[in-house]
Length: 340
Image 1: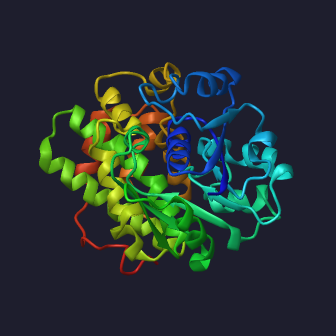
Image 2: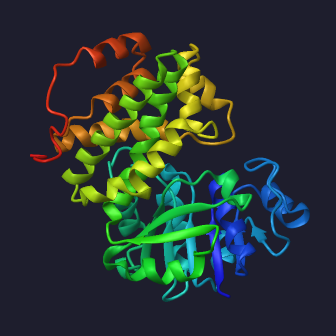
């Protein structure tokens, strides 16, 4: 048994805390809202972010971040990606010497265009890469909390941290596979949310299964192009953090990003819709950062480009569709074999 802290009591953070407590670890979950922490402690529920999930009685919760991470051997950071920097900086003074850090947030930071690993290098300068791992893969929070079978990827430089954390989190119904490609695992986890918005819109417009399959496949090509340009191993995108997470998020009805795409297809304003939700659709902000990053790296990402313009520049959805399908023809592996 190990002492773990999970920083972020959204759906995904709560599900990870639930899993870790269920397999016998001493787990404290940090919640930004005191009422959420109180409910987890007193009623073993998180009705705000993960309703209907019965949490282990052993799971502790706190609205005090320093208290939550105090003494923890492993700290899982699970805030929205836009908050990772400030949350990491706030817990930094309380981290134990030698504690392992697992980043389960998925996104690209707006403004800086940095991956979560680059954000963490600045927010936690005292924690070297040998102590940091990145968690991704096809994993709806509701199903993890319910104990349904799930496979995930855990990446770190040299796999040192990943292998140490694997021993603690792996279980028959939560299989953890290690990877030595943190860049690829992060890019796959971030950009698949953008593709899920596009796929939700595609389905909402009634374009059929052929179009959905094509969109997912061409989305994988965009993810791979960007990942390779940033130094990732292209084979990573054939695994859990690539095609696995992409297929789940693009096709599963529990996907918040897919739902956002469907709402846009129904004619709803995306920012208005999201303002009424407790949970975050990461693809909304990620598409803006990803599009800027693609331009910076000179990487062709047309789906990402049009998702950005529809969500943030009021481009009519059908205009975006027409511009996308009327692009010039090219080789299928264009930009992947030779990203330069």
